[in-house]
Length: 281
Image (cartoon, rainbow, N blue to C red):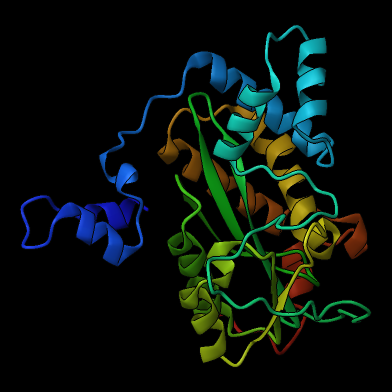
């Protein structure tokens, strides 16, 4: 949205109203100015993030009650507003859990019953909100399903497509293409740019069912590790500090952190044990 708004200029041959129509942008968003997040909201967002990570099946009603029990004076509308701002969606079977863009194609889930037993067989991607000392950012990762290795990642202040495409292109350049790529049905993953990048490399596209967080469980487990082992301990002040911190964390995660599911091996050890794995840089 930020890039589209930047394209709209008042002193042009076309009126602002017509420019908005051509770009499919609400006119109100062009005139709107972002407001600073209050200290009280930042505190609540941090608590919401921790509660959501613990109980992702809790909706706004139950989260509101939980926060009230902790002494916060909040109502459901406020919780709903903050959840929308953070991109948090309650996990349970329901329609339109993860909304694709208008006219975007949804692909079937290809991993059900599939034995994933080698590196670069299946990659997955997802995005999550990252709480900071003042505000929050969004983290997108590309991960190899078999080895749990984080292949690429990006941090941005929106849930737009660009960060996802950049992370994908980096992973493809450095490690070649997987056989299957799995994501949720979010608009950033059903976008023309993201799908085109996968099709260009002959990758089979797989998407989670609606409300089926377990379909992309490998990435969901990664979020818990990132937040409890790094983000919650650091309370990063700036986007630059966050990027620096995550660079160190993912280096540790890939090269030193041993996984029980990998027979106590590290993701790097498992990933590069496959002779077919490509690493350009």
